[in-house]
Structure formats: structure tokens, C-alpha cells
Length: 234
Image (cartoon, rainbow, N blue to C red; front, top):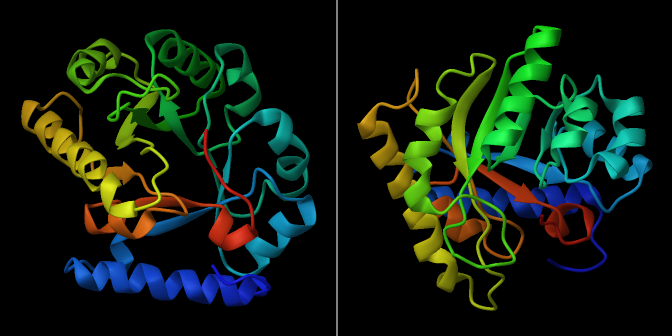
């Protein structure tokens, strides 16, 4: 990213890079959606992001998101992309359309319980720790099938995709096997028919590696630095 760009200039630069990555892999630009990660920015900047037409907002912690959501929650679509503590489910349910970090049965049960009480349907991504790093949350890939079997009876949850975080590499090409494996895992799980509807979405790729993620099948990329000036993550 070139320093000193306006928000509109950064958006245009990201759009060009996303479009190039789609073209390089034979994908339609409409296949990929951008989440603007606003966790480190002010309410004013988050509002400017929405006003600029980026309607998908990503936040990592309710404590940081609460004020922004209270003011801006009726605008755009809100994604919870960070590690979600079970005792915080009550705060985010009904506010975030997508939860990108479902990684354990206790969280699934609490999301289902709170959603049942409010009549909500929660669209979730199962977080998978493809890289195996201790610092990353998520299920090991080999546990994903049994996890889907375990949550099949939770009728207020709709599994729409898988999510992963790659190691932060200086050379983004080094992340390619991580993203490729998540796509392969999605396809393997779909072949097993463990969900009511096929899993279609892949939430993967951040500011330093999103082009490689797109080339490997990302349908949602989570961008903080290149859009709003600070690195995103979990």
C-alpha cells in the first residue's frame, strides 16, 4: 500500500488488485467479497468506510465494536471475525450476521441457544487451523468432519463456509498451500454431505496475502491495513 492515500484511493487500489487476482485465476470478480476490518480504527473512519460503499464490516472483539455497532449497526453487514468467548455470545447475537470463528462445540451450543431464544438464524464459518500453529485458533483439519456431524442438530446455525488464517509471511507465495488445503477440505466435506446445503464460502486472506488467497478460491477476504491503515487478525 502506498502511504498517504485517501480512503477512496485505497479502495480503488484494492479493487484493482482483487480484480487482477480474479482474472489471473479465471474467476469472476463477483465471486470475491471484501470485508473491511475496522477493529483498530475510529467510529468516524468506520462510518467513512460504509459511506464509501464498503458494506461488509469486520470486528474482532465486542468491546471494541460496541460503540461502532450502536451508532452504525443499521448500516451494512457485520462480520465477527475474531475468537469468540462463549460468555460474549449474548453481546454479538442478532448484531453480526456472520460469525467467522466457530471452533468448538460449547460455542456452537451457546450460539444455537441464544439464537433460538431470539428467533435468529446465525450464518457461521467453521475456523480451521490449517497451519497447525499454536498461536492460531481453529479445529485441526482432521477434526472438521466430526465437528460438522456434532453440530448437525443445532437448527439455528447455518454453516456457510470455512475460515482460516495463514502465517504472516514476507513472501505471500508461502501461504498458498494453506489456502489451497482449506479449499480442498471444503470440497472433501461437501462430498461427505454433512451439511443441509453445500458449504460454498471460504473466508481467507488478509492484507499481506489476499491475492494468493483469491487465486486459491477465497470468497471473502478480510482487509484492514490496505483499506484503513492497520493490520487485522485474530
